[in-house]
Length: 165
Image 1 (tube, helix red, strand yellow):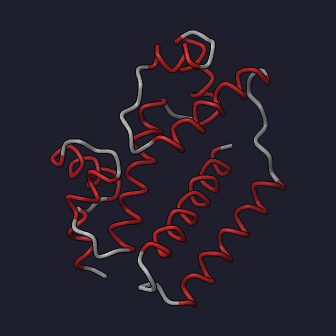
Image 2: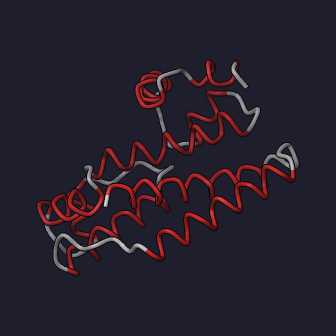
């Protein structure tokens, strides 16, 4: 299950890199774009061949999937409270948190933060955009907490990644 989640995250990152490359207006080489597309196709194949095995009821998996999709489509916006999300999906706080943790191996807020950080990372390494706008574009409202979270997750500051390109 954990490997599949890693594959899903990598697939998401590949898609993000591809979309960033389109925004970068040709700053990525054709070979790099082909490589991203190839990796993306391989990961999609792995995910299709190895569907996640439910550890809980189909309803709980659907609930977790709905919450994940909500986060993936709204990660640049402030995340509603767990209670608001639960109400949105017609359940209670406990069921939402429990089903999400079982399906994805982490809490909702951790997943939300990881998605925003992965997006920020792709912008840091894939564009020349300044770090402050990347912070805000990734859904962070506080630059200091963004830098702290980024360094904790990736081991280096965004500027340090830029200097090693």
